[in-house]
Image (cartoon, rainbow, N blue to C red):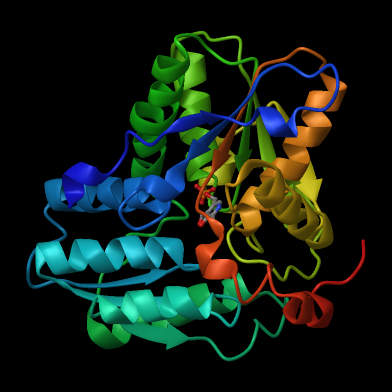
Length: 311
Ligand SMILES: Cc1ncc(COP(=O)(O)O)c(C=O)c1O
């Protein structure tokens, strides 16, 4: 299973090109075995913890996840023989929770957002701290663990440049922990590439000096300034409202046949803006997962009417 991680396809998304735009490409991370880019992150976190000797067959691991890392770590736990507890919140897709459970992990769902900040992620991290104490567990901490950078520096970004045969002008990457964008930026800096790396963040996310607000979609944006984000300086940040992300996901699906997830919708919206603002530029968009787990949410009119407000 582990050998199936990475080497995901890079496909042309010509149908999304506005007039005057250069080539557009999508890096489809849903082709990883767990269906998301987080397979790469989980592999790097686990390998690093094993190397440091803190993760063995007898370990109990507790991690907070919006879903995709949970799926990836649940599989790592099966293969590594350790016990996994995943802390999630109400926004995690039902099918993703079922996937994590089917792999034998235990789910802990926080019941309310943090009282002081009103944020779900803050509440999730507090529950992780409690469970680490109660279970004598370890926490790999995807929000501060630099191993996440190496997964995307040596994996995702290297693959993109090799697949294209050159560096793209612009790379658009959704951000949450910022491990993906930070890893890509490291590759760009190390190889002195001309690529402009653009973070696609959520409106309401506090990353990169954002103003706190309600966020309804899982996967992109964050309610805490992650330690990784303090080590990461994207060349530009575009903040996308949930309504725009939903609309762009649906448009992308009907135009290209690829069904994006929620962060993929945000990335598609950002790419459209970037393509219009930068005529002729070659743009690569990373799609962290696909829309199959979102059929009951962003692709469901009733759910959207109940949950997503207008900008
Ligand atoms: C669907 C999706 N998109 C984007 C991201 C953001 O990736 P990162 O945490 O590396 O910033 C995640 C991370 O959980 C995700 O699951």
